Length: 187
Image 1 (cartoon, rainbow, N blue to C red):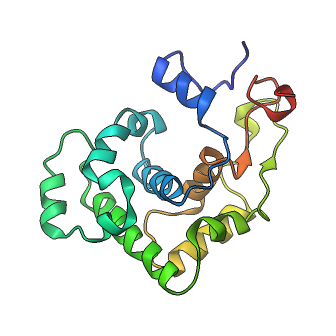
Image 2 (cartoon, one colour; image 1 turned 30 degrees about the horizontal axis):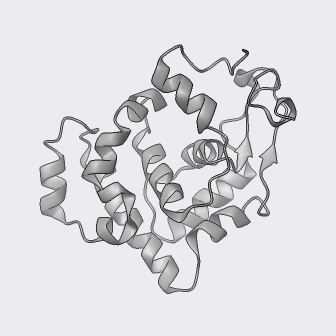
């Protein structure tokens, strides 16, 4: 079975590649979780974050925005001692800020999941890369998403993070053409 060249033989990574990466996510909570986790990756590998995902879910109320938004400085101090997550004050605080920004969007009438998918015209963008190394790390769409998120108060949402988020949540499908998960091979 052919897979994208970036995935290792680690069972956790294989399961992520085979079952999650590039699959269209429309659930608000799942999109919020992945946006926050992608921000945690800044300067690190995705696998580092993936191994800690369950710890993040436990530390951040399974990424329910209403619960996360209620967290405070004492929670940040407590989480700075939590070895199961990346102990970076800015990244921890960003998750809380992002929950508050999401709720503010919704209070202003913007539905987070619909708003996210509007950036790709509500349709998964399928790319045709033969080698994962030729896939871009940002695009005009990830630039626009990053700017719009920052304007709304989100943190750790640069264009590269947004592109990675879009790949992970299936807004774009960057499985290489030879990968069994590329849409052309699933027919």
